[in-house]
Length: 104
Image 1 (tube, rainbow, N blue to C red):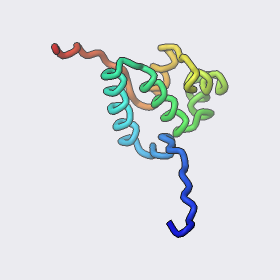
Image 2: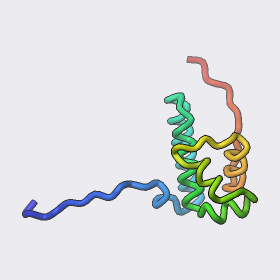
Image 3: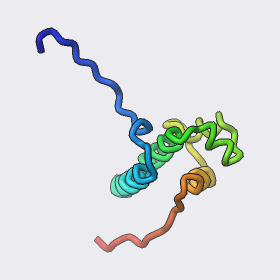
Image 4: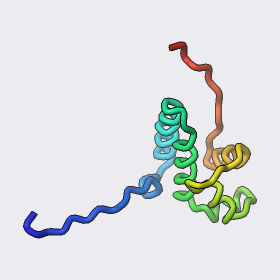
């Protein structure tokens, strides 16, 4: 390594989301992971990251929600209501749907 210092930066999903296709791909992949792992935290974190990539202040204004409250509910420690999740997804141009599980 010739004495060169290697530095690492933390990977941040919000830096990778630039297009609607990025959002779609992220949500589809993370939803599948959340279902496989039976852990909705994956999906909630991705929704929060996508919301931050759009701009939380703008999103809060568009949803007529408190910015600080939206930040908190979509943070890793947050626990957003179903209503908040649905409103955020709707604002991003998505809707939730239900599918019957495949037989194992």
